[in-house]
Amino acid sequence: MVDALMQQLERAVTSAWYRGALWLWLLWPFSLLTSVVVARRRRRFLLHPPTPLSVPVVVVGGVTVGGSGKTPVVLALVKELEARGKRVGVVSRGYGGSPSREPREVHESTSAALVGDEPALIKRKTGVPVAVCCDRVRGAEYLISHYDIDIILSDDGMQHYRLPRNLEIAIVDGRRGLGNGRLLPMGPLREPPSRLSEVDFVLTRNSEDAEPSISYRPTGFRHHTTCQYMEIDQAVDKWSTQNVAAVTGLGQPEQFFDLLRSLGLSITAQSLRDHRPISLRMLENTEAQIVVITAKDAVKLPPAIDERIWILEIEAVVPDSLIEGVMAVIDSKG
Image 1 (cartoon, helix red, strand yellow):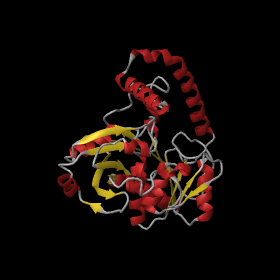
Image 2: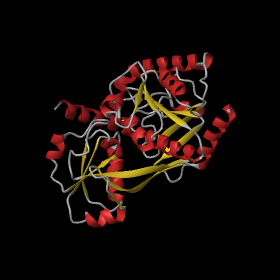
Image 3: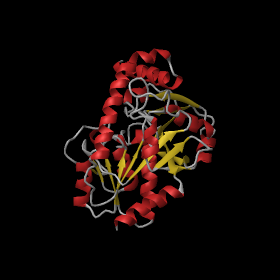
Image 4: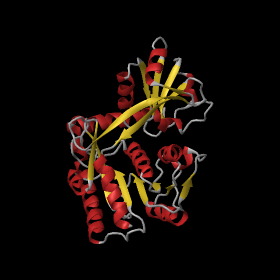
């Protein structure tokens, strides 16, 4: 009941942010306070930047709250950098897990409930060293002291100014933009729009016109229990006469649902709050022959929880200019 109410509240506030509801002006004094705090932290960072680490740090983040597709970009960067012979480590706060002030290394068997779904997903997808910590600096130092790495990627963390960075990548949703352009809680922004002019790369997703942009390419479906792989066309044809439910705990679930529909699937959509795990009770109450989830949802579930579950596998395609920019940062430190 509490989760359902919180989900309704989050949706109502998010909808208000992106349609510019007038009642949000009641929150203007609080957003004014946010602007003072944000400006002070940014000024302190510029006047007294943190001591650089021994390897370059690339931060993948954004200025809006909610899902913007940062983790798929991190996964794509890991893949591209490893293909070029670079050794990569990833650091994260571990949102959704059990907060830790001490660095906690993520292993393939580590529970997502402990370290967060995104770090667990990155580890299982890539196998690279991953550490979570409320203080990303300590997490990065742990990776440097335990592994021979060439670069650290920070999954989120643009506003974590204790962390030194050699390059910043901001992700912007082309459909939603920056909402009403206001800072929290009046709007969805963690920092003012002008912050985007200070980063090294702004990547736009869900836009065919923007350059540089990110595209998300579905590659197939994988059975959650057996790991059986099925091509998209084969799955769409096989499931055409079956009831298919799409269930997810993403920040922007409609994008997942729209993607499945664009592939030719007729689905019944069910969503939870961002980062929330799909429960056994929810699955038991889902009357469908096939249940499709995301990889982010899958890391929070035991393999044998439900034989109906299939995972939509996707990969982000990032521009060559971004890879060249990151490679230049690594080479400059060498």
